[in-house]
Amino acid sequence: MLLRTTALLMGALLVSSACGSSRTYPEKGDGDYDLKAMALTANELPTGFEEQDLGEVEFDNAAWAAFYGVDNVEAKQAQLDAQKRVRARVSTFQPAELGKLFRITAISTLYENPQSASDSAAKYACGLPIDDKEPLSPFAVPRIGQEANGFFVDNVTESGLHLIDTTICFRTGRIIHSIQQTGLPGTEDVALAVRLAEKMNEHVNAFFDGRAPTPATP
Figure 1: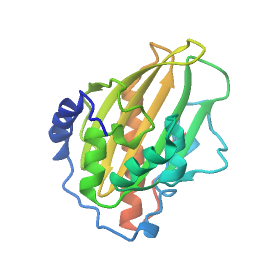
Figure 2: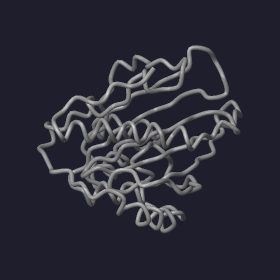
Figure 3: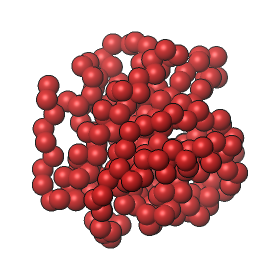
């Protein structure tokens, strides 16, 4: 797989934020990670956002490869297998009324080991379905989890609509968590993405500590 031209810069951002948390995340069996318990809830989103019913919310590599829009889905699946990706859980939220911010998506992706998860954040756009050659524009983020990074992606839809994704990823053990906002230019809100990432990290810590997460404040 081709590495992105921004990989080194993203790696530097990861290093700068990697020492932010001294806690550890003991490894469990693949089936023992409750990704649903780590997910955001609608109460934690901005007012007016509602969780969408996706039907299927967990995706193995075969299903995830189809989201890349490539001609050879089997080859993409093989790349995901080689990156030691196991599965992911997706939560998507949309505003009740159409606005400039179209969607907020939260994804937790489990890898075979912590190093594979770290490599995904530094080299493979946090495992998100983004074309390998798509340029990323990194930005600095505060220390969340064991390491964190952020980047913007410009997208132009087939209809010519210009969209911007604002993404923050952070790692806890062998899981990469991603918060992605999709909207028109000018809707980039890094502060909101940071708040959501920090709230998601609270859910993760609660799961590993064996306690219920703190309820969201309306």
